[in-house]
Image (tube, rainbow, N blue to C red):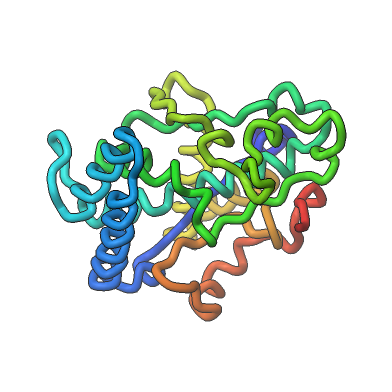
Length: 258
């Protein structure tokens, strides 16, 4: 049913112990992020920015926020939020570029399952406002969106100096925390993530692979990749080759080139 739809697309980020390079590598990565968070906090100019910065620093340092601490596992989950969000935005630009989608593409709403650990929630809220300044993230928008009348999403998200986008204007000022059984989009995201995870972790399971193949049209992206890999450090070709057989042979025709 999902694979037969042409109005539904998903971005999936996957990782493994191989890509995380071991517990010491995770701790070192977290320590580097703590240093960046401390620098950001020192330069915060608003009360809201200082509050976000203080939460991020406390959590990254292993301190308690509310009743929770940030475990290394939850840190990895939180670190995967920005690339997942940016990949979802890029898919939206690609597959909903036509003018017929303008009313629906006037703004992007970011919703997350309210069962997400509180620590991941705090960190994702702290990271998303600055995601636009990360050199790893690049968005390609349809050229015709710049023709008069300019596309409403670009009009509100373009940076005043004309270079790049303001993430707060692109995704809004906050995350909507929703209950998964009340929100179909979260249910679809959970299912897509489960299918990819199951296919990777159980390569001999025929039903999981059948589900994965049926979802290819929903998952396909740049270069035909059905999911992105999250790694500490760059993904090595020999490591990525393990999953190469799961990707599509070619990228969707709607994919934008920039």
